[in-house]
Every structure is written in structure tokens, then in C-alpha cells.
Length: 293
Length: 293
Image (cartoon, rainbow over all chains, first blue to last red; front, top):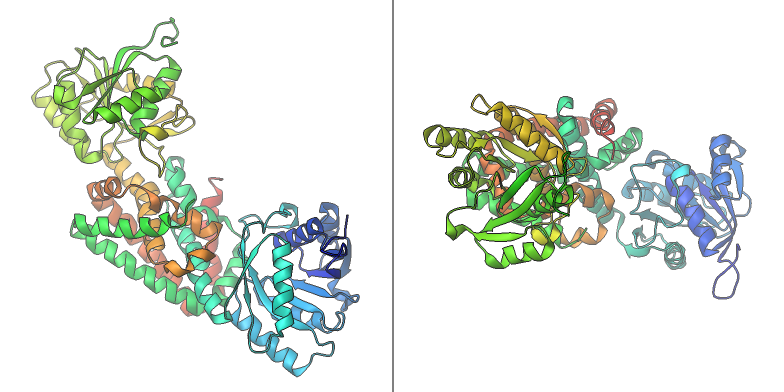
């Protein structure tokens, strides 16, 4: 059951997933579910982790990073931590099949995309076609053992084409994410980074700060509100350190807006201003209600 | 199936629930499940709402507030918004059965309890025995139609005895909440208010502020993190305005701690201080991990 598309054959012959954790593993499982790739190759540093990925059914075959080159894959998806994405994309693009589609799953885009574009402008022996992606899916759980074939179902993937992106890559990456169950939105890398600073990175900072200031002896009193509001604070520390510093400027801008809002809260409470407190609560409720659960 | 306890008879003959919304309705359903009261009377301003409560099975009978007095109930639980709790407790205590247990479900305790204690010291014709309660359960959904008999299962109820509380009331209110599925923690009213400022009220302010600063055109990009972190912002505006202003001073203290924490975040990000960002994330993760999901 590895082959299926309109014509009954898989869209890609061989797909390489570089970095097989939660996201990479779920891409493997979802590619398999869609029958979109004839063979799925996992690339990484740790043979033990890649063996686990094979056991989970996320990949068919493994290539160690130290091998330094890939078989003739026509699709490369780099799912490493953001610090390493640009380097990996440029590296594996050199050894993929001629004209392969290369994308990534990094949570920030501006630096990654500009570095990759610059490197491929300089040297692109196989005419790899790169476009940045960011699937807005994930979990506070990490590791290939938490992979799910439905992780992207109903989720949004932002793709970030630039003036250097071949139009065929835009089309092909849309096919990719759509076949994995997601819907696709296209934005510039900079607009993406500002957007996720507000919708993902700032919530992480806030959740973390809120958990950190809760006196441990009061934890027996927490209920649904605290549990929901702090949930993402359980996320992987080094992953989030990288994301937040990588996207530092947009995160600082979003944080400044929040600090202003909290200043309005402080003033309204200090002045016992019923109307102001209600207005602040109503602003938050209106936006939250617009989304649903 | 309205009667059951160790001896096969209900603990209370008649229970009055004043204010039958989510909490009051759930208390009715849980009392019924436990067979802890022979009859459950709902008290309120709106006949239509009380009729809905009867239809839900949350109460057996209704008494309109305008009636001004109760049958000979031996248990009164006041579940009105915090602004009105003290007034209702003092009022209905005057017309309950001799020595009735009277409690409330208000989210703040210091002012309510001191007002009620003072009023009952002055005038307590039926020797009502009052003790404050706060069930740490709820939902961003309100209204009797969302009541559930299991709302208190596994939850914590804080009770707040004072020097004026008869020891028999402490024991009896523990029986009450335990029979509804909860476990009971006893604290002073002031300690309770400081605790919930940190564990419930501050998370509400934060969730609301975070939702409010999210540009509406980015809502199509929100995923699990934002949804969790902002969930409670959907709560009832006037209910939360009352809670936050009622507990203003402890909330401002908790808010100041969070503002300091965000200041540390700002500094760490501005200085691109990897170790500081990791330390901040780790503090939040350690506390969040101590609780579980």
C-alpha cells in the first residue's frame, strides 16, 4: 500500500525526511497514509532513533548524517531544530535528485529562507527547488514515538515563497501538504515570522512566565484555567530557546504589545474602574469567541 | 432514588440552592446523585431559569427570590455572583431551619466571609451555622443547561473557617463536598484569596490580554498553543469583572510578579542571552511538569 495518486502511482519516488522527531515522523506516517511516496528515507545522527522511526512505520529506510549524501530522492523535507535548518537544506539539496523539491518545517522563516536562497543562488548543482514551509501543528510532546499520521489533518501549513522560488515548487509543495491533510496559506517569510510571534511564540513566553510565578505550594489548588493557560510551558526547553531567539525581534514587538495591555489592566484595577475592566475582558472574549474551542 | 447515606436516609431533609447556574445546577445534580438531600429547592429571580433547572433535574422545586423566605431547609448553598453572596447568605440564613448549615460557592472569600460573620454576630435568629466554600471547578460555559453531576468529581473545594465558625459546620460542610465528589482543603479567607489570585485570577487576566493583542486577521493561523493559553478568555465578562475587582489587591500583587517575570524575559531576549532564556523556560517547565495535564 505504498502507491496512490490520480494515476495510481505515488507523486514522489523517494522522499527524505531529515530529522525524524514528532514532526518528521508524522510527515512519514502521513506520506505513507496518502501513498504519496514510494519510499521514505529517514536521515539523522542517531541510528537508534532512526531504528525507532522504522519500528513506528514512519520511515522505510535510514541514512546516517555522517554518510553525507542521499540516494536520488525527489523530495527532501528538513525537520531539524531551526538553528540547523538552513545548513541541512543547503547540504542535502546538493545530493538529491536533479530538480528535487526541498522544503523544511521550521517554526521561523525569515533567516532560514534568506540563507537558503543565498546559498542556492551561489551553488545549486542539482537545480534543487526550495520553498520554506511551517506546519502549524505540534504538541508539547516530542519524539518520533508520539508521531501521528493525522497530525496535519485540518491544520494550516504556511508556505513562504520568495522572488527566488520557482512557481513549480509552490505548486508541488501545496500538493505535498494537502496530501498530508493540511490546508496551505502563502505569506512572505517576514510576515510569517511576525504572525507566529503573536500566535505561537508570545503564548509560549506567557505560559512559561505564568507557570514560573506560581508558588509551588499552591499547585494543589490549580484547576482548568491555570492548566490550560500554562499547558505549552511543558514544551522542550532547547527547542523553544532556539525558536524564541531566532525570532527575537518579532517576539519582542509582540511582548511589548502585551506589556502595554497588562499596563491597561493594572491601571483599570488600581482605579477600580468597572467599565474599563469590563471593556478589557470583552476585547479578549470577542477575539477568543471568534475562533471557537 | 433520592435517599442514601450510611443509614439509608439522606443527610439533609431539604437543601436550598440560591442562584441556579452552572455551579448551583451541578450542586443540585451531584446532591441528587449522592442521595444526600430528600428535596432540592432552587431559589432565584427568574422563574424561567428555575423551570429550566427543574427540567434538567437539578432541582425539585422552585422558590422565587421575591417570596423572601424559605421552607425549613437545613442546608443553604448560595451560588450567586460574588457581589451578592454576603447579602444572600445573611438574608436566607434568617428563614432557614433552626441551626441550618449555610455556605456559599463564591470565588473570593475575605470580604464575603467577614461581612457574613459580622452580620450573623449581630443578628442570627435561627442560629444558622455559616462557613465559606469555594469549589475549584467551573467552565468557560455558564448556565444551568451546562450543569453536570460530575463537575466536582476529583476537584478541590477550599473551605474558609474563621474564629466564628462552629466546629460542627466545618465537619458538615466537609461531608457535603465530599459527598459531591470533591476533596476539601481548609485555609483562612485571606490565604485563599491570595492563592486563587495566583492560580485562577491572574491566568484569566493573562488569557484575556493575550487574546486581546492578537490581530484578528491572524486568527486563521492559531493552533493548539494559542487556543489553550487563551481558552478562559471566553468566560463571562460580568462574572469575571466582579471577581477581579472583588479580589483586586491580591490580583495586583500577582500581576506585579508576572510583570517582573516578563521584564526578565525582555532583558534575556534583548541581550540574546541563551542561558537566561533557557533558565526562564526551565523554571516554567519544572512547575508545569509538576502538575501534569
